Structure formats: structure tokens, C-alpha cells
Length: 498
Image (cartoon, rainbow, N blue to C red; front, side):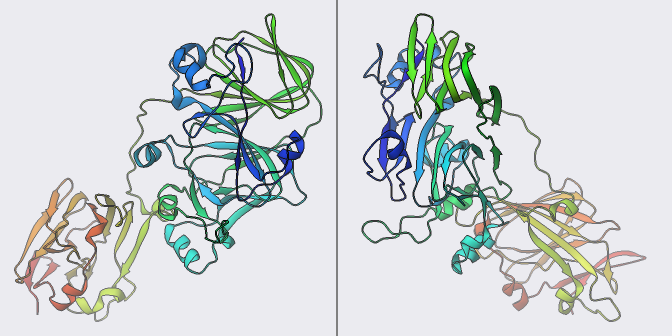
């Protein structure tokens, strides 16, 4: 038979409730987690009955990967099922996506979802936040106001909660849920309510990794599925990694063979007998089983609710469009973009003369994203737009700077418009390179540099650099660029600074 029931794996937790122990007739031992199906090295499920009794699912898969998992499926696509019994709120946490998890943890990324079996009156859980940047979160942590920015939602029995990777989330107090998710055990603890362990110590947090992987746009989702005892099939989740169906059964239901891949099956209400050919398997309330890909049609006898999880084959490679930031009207709506607008009032002491010119004249705009100065080798991307304006004949320019770390270099690429890139070394020598669409400029960290628009249209320049470089503006204040650039009817002129 293609149905494999396994022994539950119970784990003690600091936040455990007693709902699962009550329902299963077990003594309350603060077991907050019970793994139902897992082939992850951290929890290996063992078959509990039949010819394969005593063997791990992992060993059966290794022996017959195509028959167990389906053609082309690997351990990467496996699903994990576990009961979570929250007597107290779980820590606020976030899971990484596949690439980050493989690089940093040698584990798979984690997307998960929860079916709420029981929830106390007024129970809530954390799903997303109202934060829009890492800076906001750091400030909230500093002020110990992090809870004020978390988004919580009420839940009750029958709700199904969607938690894609990158989503801040936490199961709340008084909730019993079954989790179905990808084959991963990587969780970054973001916030833990200052909870202390048995030794009186606050539990370890993983703030920096949490901030690396959090997606501030993710709010998850919740689908309500009241148990009305009307036979039906409802798809309640469709992630890139897997999909989940709820099947309400009144007497009998045929689960057609799914030769493409394995499936998981969980009994959420009632008790069932699974019939495949001449063999039967009892699937009791709150129990789960693994259905191998080589199985046949299964007839389910009973009344209640079944949850079926089905994996999707992961794409080995996906070709996507690159992110190109050229329209700042869109960039301003993107919370991940940093930077701002510089007006004449911000640089008026640096121009030769500002008499009679509106101090709110916009000179240039900078937008940057990506990169972390705490991560060696990371890169930041920037886009500077200089307006085609002059201040009493002097061309608009950027403030200019040296790198705080002069070993770090930078690349500028002309995108549109024309102008100059002015350099200055520590002796005060000054020279310029022409900037035009497609021009590439390799800037040594030991050179001060500023952009100047000498054309009649906005000049856009891309930049790529390691954010460890930093910006040393004070050095330019102490030793200003020795040349100015003016434009009149006769053309562009570079003259000594006065």
C-alpha cells in the first residue's frame, strides 16, 4: 500500500499549551511541537505500521526515490507537517527563501501555512507588520516599541493562514494548529517579548539575519473555512512550492491517484479508513500520513475533514526581468529606496553666487537601494539625477565627497544627458571626465568626486559601490574643489575657484 503512517515526534517548548495532549489523551509534558511527517535531519519520521514498520521515510525514499516522491522530485520538494500547541505566543519570527537559506544555513527556504484546529476566544496571531524599512525596526527595537508595529489578526477554528517566506509571523496564545510547509528547519527569531528560559536568560535573537530576509510587503493571508458538514473540495493555498486542498467528506470520497508526485494527508475532523485495493489503513483524528507517488486511487470512508498537501516541482532556473530604477515617481513609493532631493538652500554656501535665485530650486535627486555595510563584498546601487539648471550661470552639481574608506572604489555609468565628473586628489589637483549616455567611470576611493550637469536635459548617472566605502563630506568642506563650471551662450567654461 502507498500510505505510510509515522510515529509522532514530540518536542518540549517554552511556549507549550495542553490542547494536543488533551485531545490525544497524553499527560501534559509541555510538548508544544509534534512532528507528524518529516525527513529533515532535525526530525526523522519512522513508519509506524505495515511492511515498512520501523524504517525511516528517508530510507524508503533513498531506496526508491521515483516511486516514493515522483519522477524528477527530490528532497528539496518534500513537505513537513507538525502540530503547534501554543499556550503562550510563539516568538515573532521570519523564514528565509531558498537562496539565502542554502548560502547561510545549508538548508532549504521555508514557506509554511497553518490550519487552526482550536483557538481560544479572542485569540490572535502576528502576520506581517506596519514597518517599511530596517531603520524603522532598529529604532523600534532601541525604544522597545517593536510590538506596536506588528500586525495581528483574530483567528478561530477552521481558519487557514498563509505564511510565505520573508513574512514576520507568530502563532498566538491559545491556538492549536497544524503546520504544513517546505522541508526546512531554519527559523530566525526576530522578537521574543523579553521571555526568559529556565535559566532566567532571554532567548537568543537573530535580528541581523531576520532583517536580511524580511519582506516588508508581505502580510500573509487568512482564509476562513467553517466546518458545515457539507461535502466539498476547496483549494485553500497555492504557493510556488506546494498547494493544499481541504476535503469535507460525508460517508465516502475517492482520492484519485496522483502519479506526478507524493502527497500528504491529515485528518482534521472525524476518523477515516483509507482503502487502496485490498488493503486498508486507519487514519484517526489528528493523524497524518505520507502517500507515495506510485499509489493507486484511495477510497476514504468516514465523515469529517481531510487536508491534502501536494508539492510542486521547483524550477531549476527562472529568467526574470532585471530591476532598473529610472523613474523616481515610482521609486518614491518603494519603501526599500533611500535617498532624497537636494535644493539650493542645502548647497547655497557652495555656489559662487545665489543672489536672486529661489532657494527651493531643485538641483539633484539621489535614490539608492541594496547593500549592507556590515556584509563584506555587498554592493549598493544608486541613481543620481541632476537637473538642467544653473545658479547665476554656474551649472548644478552634487555636493561631492571622498570615500571614508579610500580603499573602496566605485563605478559610475552615464545613463542620459551630458555633463562632467570632476575629480580632486589630496594635493588639490583637479580634472574632469565627460559624462554621456553609456560612458563608464572607474573611480578610485582616494579621489574626491562630484557630478555636474552641463546639458539641457536631466543628467542621470548610475552608481555601484560597496557601502563599506562611506562618504567623507567633511574633507571636501575643508578642501573645496578648486574649479567651478559655468555655462553661457558661448558654451561651458571651467574656471578656477575664487
